[in-house]
Length: 269
Image 1: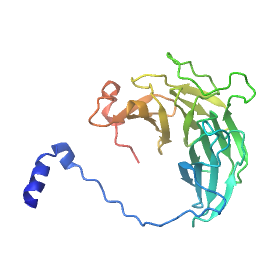
Image 2 (image 1 turned 90 degrees about the vertical axis):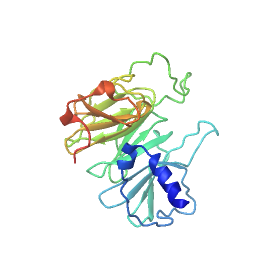
Image 3 (image 1 turned 30 degrees about the horizontal axis):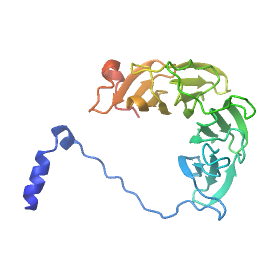
Image 4 (image 1 turned 120 degrees about the vertical axis):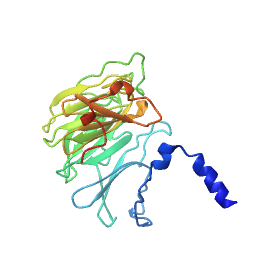
């Protein structure tokens, strides 16, 4: 009976699926790998990153303050390579509102994107604020309120963000910022923090975005943007020129974005 059941299941699997074999990734299960002090708790963890020493940086929507709805929730915690708590970085920082991602660059600077404050913060390895990008609404402003999603969308502004999501860097140290839940673009600033350019607008065509949610670069300075609302990954060069696109085989979300075969996936090492 069991053999017949297995045979029927195999017959029902599509040929393309049957040819795929997922690799087995070995791992060790370590209970409670990060040890918190007795008076600190994780909230909703939205990002984890490592520095060159193996220290773990955790971005948590914890230490909330304010009303039950729309409370400020961002906490950056550092642990050593053995999981022992070291410190909280940026406690009570003006930019903290609703943390989204944490990344560590090649020089061990720590970068945080905060979706709630529309700000990107760069900390040096000692935990001091080195750069600030963007600006949140002032608490004293009469019209301060959650950002809206007007249709058609408002045009983006140089130097400001609307629910920013992530950062990445090229070999020159320039920074790429995915922006975001309201804006539909990638911004680029140089290693000194000077605004260089941005590209992208709302839509489904090549170079357009619907919630650019994450961003990464490779050794050749290609820029990979997770275009979440369009269910695809778009690839650009460091100047924003579209190269290629990848999406699920079950969708057609890259059919209008074909690139020369040499520029398509898989990703290059």
